[in-house]
Amino acid sequence: MLVVTPCLHWGETIAGYTQARKNVIPLDIKFLLSLSDKALAVIEVNKDVFDKFDKGGIDGEGKFLYRSPISPREVFESRKADFTKIQNTYNWLSWNFADAYVKTHLANTTVAATIIH
Image 1: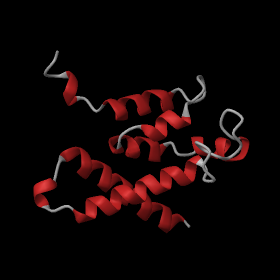
Image 2 (image 1 turned 30 degrees about the vertical axis):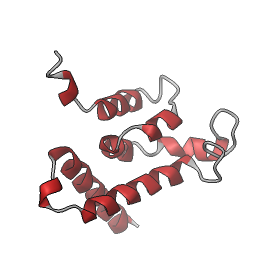
Image 3 (image 1 turned 60 degrees about the vertical axis):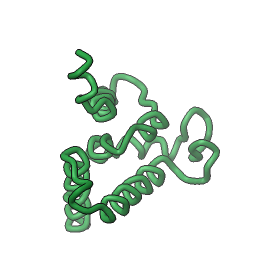
Image 4 (image 1 turned 180 degrees about the vertical axis):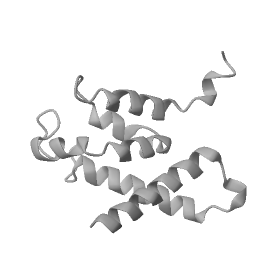
């Protein structure tokens, strides 16, 4: 168990579990945005959850997140941009499957969003 447990991407698992039940349980958007970069691909698929928080706010904070003037969607988009920028500076020695999956997934959704608009 001690060998297998660290191999799981817990952030991705938690994000997928909570977002699959987004109509049943209240989502903790602050927590979702604090998960590791490995969860970005799962959050990207369900980023529509940010829409209701951009308008109504989170826990009475208005559209501000952590007393910041940016919305949860803007925080997410900033994290995606930072992840992509950092990944582009890496060489082949820094390659790993998890980062490659997230980078590919984010690139594909960006291309699809560009084509749709």
